[in-house]
Amino acid sequence: MAEISKKQLELLCSQALEAREISYAPYSRFRVGAALLAKDGQVFTGCNIENGAYSPSICAERVAFAKAVSEGCREFKAIAVAGGAGEVPDDYCPPCGVCRQVMAEFCGPDFLIILAKTPSDCKTYTLSEILPLAFKL
Ligand code: THU
Image 1 (tube, rainbow, N blue to C red):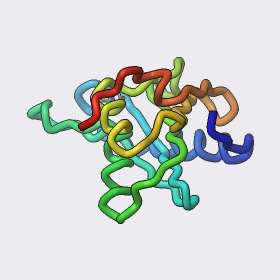
Image 2 (image 1 turned 30 degrees about the horizontal axis):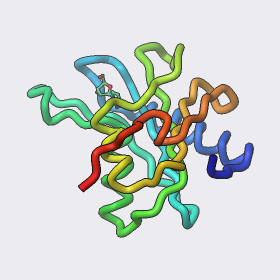
Image 3 (image 1 turned 90 degrees about the horizontal axis):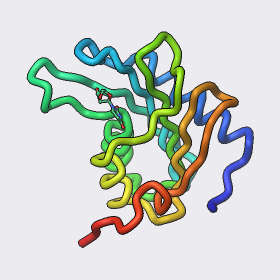
């Protein structure tokens, strides 16, 4: 598994939780935040942004990837994700299948997915664990 310090882990979880605060989710009321750590140390955050026509809605993880890639950043180490319907997340929020596929486009099998409930309560997986047999052209 790729290395990430405890301090960096806690910081990334806090940034995901903070990004969740500005989620725009008036339809599902399920608010998600993500913090994507690039190999050069930059962090790109994202929140889910819903739409009244439903299908234009976009997940927090993909907002973070879109921000990074559109700024020329394509090499990543880890992403922290925090989501839930309550005031604070009451469970871990694993990325949806579409977001896993987007991760596979830009990240290798050792990319870390950190599911955060609080800054200090999280579970970490690799991309190969949560998306085995990834489709790639
Ligand atoms: N959502 C995310 O932002 N990330 C995920 O990986 C799962 C789902 C959002 C999409 C939608 O706005 C809300 O959570 C409920 O599905």
